[in-house]
Image 1: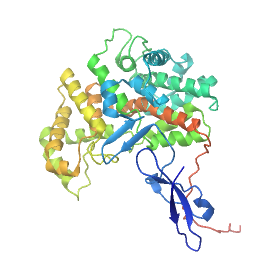
Image 2 (image 1 turned 60 degrees about the vertical axis):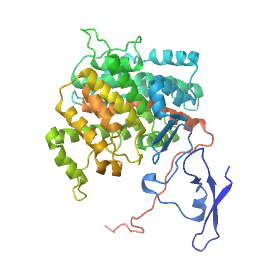
Image 3 (image 1 turned 90 degrees about the horizontal axis):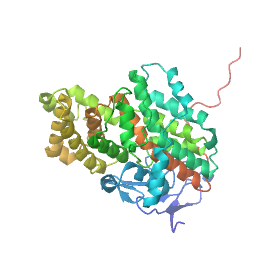
Image 4 (image 1 turned 90 degrees about the vertical axis):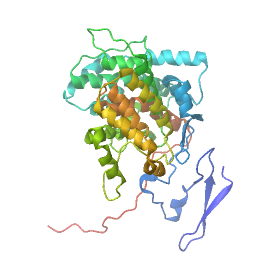
Length: 425
């Protein structure tokens, strides 16, 4: 409970007392739930100063460049853990014991197969469909194939649905890619790791043996870890809002994928590649750096700085090391990668970038890594969705586990017409 009170003086009314709640970290929040009784709402477009929920999953301090999952720093998790252990942590609130992790890992890796009739569902899409368009459809369609886990009031059903989503979304994602390029689907291989299995389903073909490159496997695992959750962003808030109505988990995650598809959210690393293509060659970099420094020029260098992180993006530090490992392993002759590396050097040395804290962010490096691995840009946001599924399902589960939940119902500042009379005919 709160031990502090905010006093709000409204015109012509007695002062309103609003409790102030303190979390374990971050800003205190003013509880305004009783404010509507006074005839007023708050106005906060984009919810930039609104705490929409109480959560113990992820904490971000953008000023200090901190990202914690259940209290653990993201760089420490990326260095010492793997994606499935991070999944367990986000879902259950603690790191697993050896036995708990073995059981969890076995369950996830042995439920990657899909209902075979779902495979036929892909044939309803045009061959040139965007993989994200396919993902929105097929993830939502899971609710038509797995009826036994749709009771959101049942804790066992919620757990089964969580495992199914974590296990099957990589399979759906890889199949979305295969369908878009006209290649046969690759079924999961339970002997491989989560990341290794995804790479095989993406790049393997039935007529040849596919051997997972350990450097690329590690890089994919790091990408999944670094994008697993990011607090109350647009897609996570979408999942929570959809879930507040009692919608089934597959529909909620499909809603999250649709939100993530927006270029202002999940398309940042794709935008970085488009920028590199626009620059084209290393000799044109000074021209574009000058444009970026010119306040009167609308051009922006994508992948530098971050809306949330005002100091540095802690995920970028991890991804930078992974990026250089992948480029060294593959030794690719790609002029765009040369452009990227020169841009990185300038950003880390140029006083303008340092003063403005425009450091390369995680999207800059992950886009380079994915391109180097041979993953097309249309799949960048799909891989983001694969990674973020655990964050979405953890927030969905946390919300349903909390007592007293109500359906989300934001209010508005109405500015339309009133009292119009229908014209006589």
